[in-house]
Length: 130
Image (cartoon, rainbow, N blue to C red; front, side, top):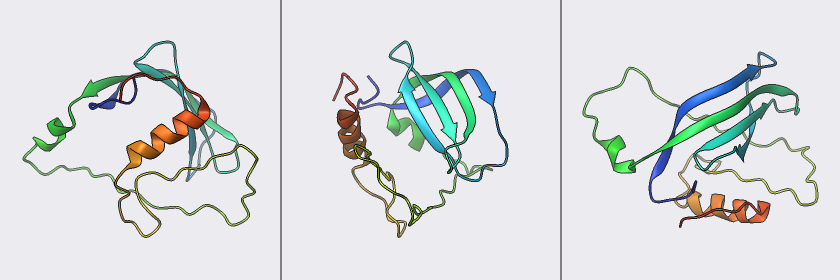
């Protein structure tokens, strides 16, 4: 039930293991982990070398409208830096690459959810919900 009208936020991390330091970009594989509220993460650098693993990350639902209720300025902010794929990347048959969230020029892609659902369908992952 990862895809629903409510969002999900990281809640509880376990089995976190760092195997390398110094990566400036990461590729992250997310897979279901023994329950509808947990995923595993495998992090690698841009060459495919392992960087870290997370045995279980429990996600909790929230209403997206709840994020708009804060009325104060934060000391912290998230800044996304676009990184184009290297020109020399050779596609592998059956490989699907998705860049979700923003186009190369920084404009927001309005229907990221639909793109993620499409890729999940290609992967053959079963899901419930909208």
